[in-house]
Image 1 (cartoon, rainbow, N blue to C red):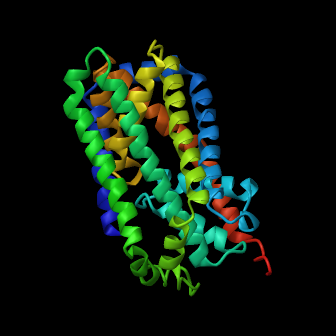
Image 2: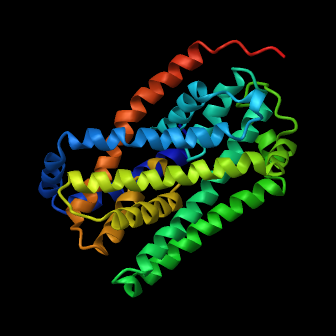
Length: 317
């Protein structure tokens, strides 16, 4: 593990532990006990969100080259598990899914190209989702008080999405071709940048992909709404969507810290306070998400291990 990753984890753990320790651990534990088996329901509600994201990735392939949901869904699941539970930056899981896909037919360059454009669609639709949630917030009864937070979320999300797409369009992956050559164990990455640009020229692929990713973000709002209710909070769907949208924007800012440790918890404290949700309940909400990441992430890591040990034979032709 790199020293920078260790430092990032320690910082995140210290921040998260400080926030929890200073907000009555007993009440946080009591809120989680109240949720009980409802936490399992919240975890299961994440499955359709991952399914929609897998549909978005699958749409980027030419029809005859699509891996199909029987492969795209497990690889997307593995991607989320790696990003949530392992000490890697938020792109680590995407490198893993590109590698696993390349073991099963497409070249490494073609696999990586679809993964990178998929990331772009995810980032752009997150910006759209954040804008929708900010609109819901500003049009609410206390919209004026939330304008600074709303503006910050818009700026952060839009800048990240725009920078990522622009970097791809203007040659970022010529650098990636060289940077990951050692990691790919000699697999050919030549033509990665050209493949990415070619995908952007095919709106019949990336427009459906964007639609599925936007649906995935909206389904995340339903997951948050369910989590609030199992905690005993009678929050509206509107409030849940705002918490999810702004929470994901804050989490994105902390992408260099594995799992956004501490960043997510701090963001929930600030956002939930706008709706009168006590700090202990806000932290319990964040911990429910952590439990879900463990419940789905550990099987995802086991699946990754199994697929690495027994890769499918590449398809001919």
